Image 1: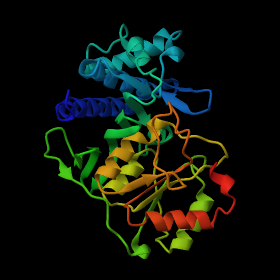
Image 2 (image 1 turned 60 degrees about the vertical axis):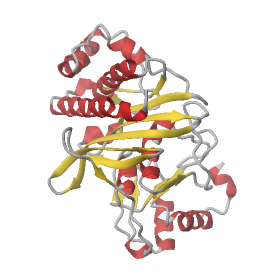
Image 3 (image 1 turned 90 degrees about the vertical axis):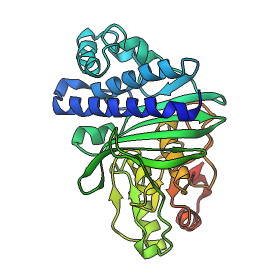
Image 4 (image 1 turned 120 degrees about the horizontal axis):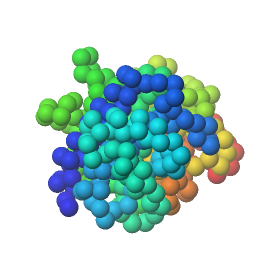
Length: 327
């Protein structure tokens, strides 16, 4: 199936999952989330979003595997929680119910690698979701180690006054666009061409556990860019750079040896590159998505409007003289 043929049903799936996540948020209970082994939260919305999108992917591209963040295993002994999740998913797709939910979630167990596959983060930024902040539903098609198509559903992203809740998309040979509703004509987007560093804006994670805020502050000072930092959760940061709300996004490792997960970056990278921006690791290397679930060959991430990329890399190098920092 051609990518152009995939667009309408994929967009529909993202809108559907977004609506489901927001419906869950409006009725959320304390018992509606778990804590994973890495101490990160997972909510019934994560499972619901993943199951809904997996249902569509199974229809569209049954031959392709999916590398997804969540798995069915934590739910197998909790029938009540399965029923709770299904009570939401079945509102949007009757076939995603208590009988099919676990099998759909298990479709996300593909190992990735050098072939063609999907990667999905059903709720990127779960902590943001829980606190009422930003989150993203991130889906990407990976081919030969690189994302060729990305979609970012951002249900709480305010594009401009009066327009909130959008979907960003783009890919190789596919224009970067933002969709403001299911029926609206999409708008083309482009990363800002800002070369005046004093006007450039940095975007980074809210959570200090996700990026080294102290090093970011040094980079800002060194570059002379605006101290008005845009902090938000999830790949909504990629969207911010893609449509020009910010010019630079830094994901700086807070502990040595950490490897990023592919589902945390694939969709955002596809959208930014389609919008004319650039994404690399902190050594300036392209991100390699052919190594399984993690970006094994890369250290950290820098995304930019393109024109600021070299200056930002140089500033990072200047403040990290020990090369082992990014090993």
